[in-house]
Image 1 (tube, rainbow, N blue to C red):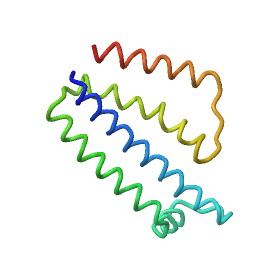
Image 2: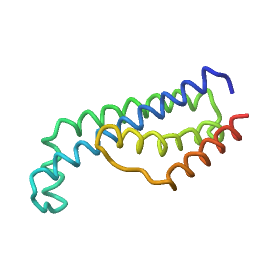
Image 3: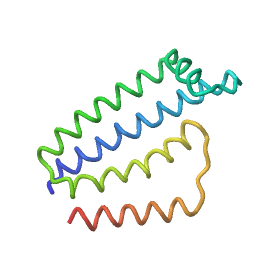
Length: 121
């Protein structure tokens, strides 16, 4: 795997992570109303939140980028990089939403990075 391919895969993971953060922002906007919304009401209300459309747009771009990557990189090599989102999203959530991480998260990060390095060789 080339360095360019690795950078592309990490960029894809950043897009997916950004989408997750935007979905969380949408969910927070829905919960601000304090209403206990049912499924249909929640969907209808979500359709009024601009963050949802941004999240869907970012996910759409990530999907197109993923298709581009899969034309050039075997899935068995590319897919493990999607696990980086499990590292990035919680860290971004700490910075943006003030969430907390515990020690088991960091052990998981070490294992994920070890696996990706092992597979990418």
